[in-house]
Image (cartoon, rainbow over all chains, first blue to last red; front, side):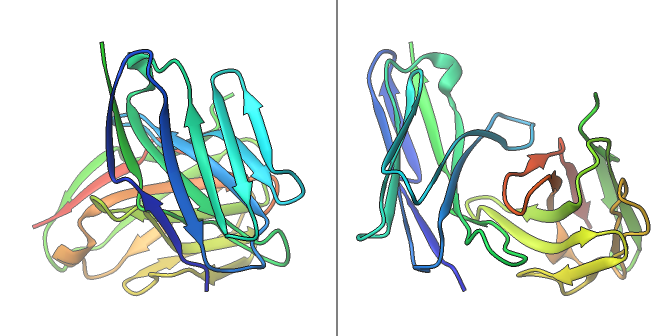
Amino acid sequence: GENVEQHPSTLSVQEGDSAVIKCTYSDSASNYFPWYKQELGKGPQLIIDIRSNVGEKKDQRIAVTLNKTAKHFSLHITETQPEDSAVYFCAAAPNSGYSTLTFGKGTMLLVSP
Amino acid sequence: NAGVTQTPKFRILKIGQSMTLQCAQDMNHNYMYWYRQDPGMGLKLIYYSVGAGITDKGEVPNGYNVSRSTTEDFPLRLELAAPSQTSVYFCASSYSQVEAFFGQGTRLTVV
């Protein structure tokens, strides 16, 4: 089955800095890669996703890049703000059959004012 | 629009007791999922369903059971609770196979 590795497990940045979280996956059949943000005491919420037919996707201060050859994808947050502090999860899934998401172990991002 | 609703939010069980975690969604999603989240371990899939009357095991199904009699509801049953089942449980639903909407979670402690 799919295996998703996520790094780092914790990341501390100053407000205004950029943050990068990296994930690798093992199953070459995976072609859907979402990122979820989980705030304290809440369920994960989808913030951005990318499919294998594109290499990069942006949404305001958030961007995701995908390298299918190397089987890795990354989340980039620019101009970080204290409200970006949360746990971020990457995931991967093949978009075929009854596929389900395989999640990384999460990155705790702390943005200090 | 409530989305995915889980009850209860918190529960303490004694070893050997049983309980049902409730999950309901009002988005008419066919796909529903149960995950458990342990510190530093991410989200592990327990069971999932692709439609009413259809369920399948995920990565960590032992000690749990599910049913899906309606599109809206997907309860998770714990029989003979064990300390290893102490966790935060999340229910999710999706309109396709992968984009998932999560509930707020149920924090379960087995003592």
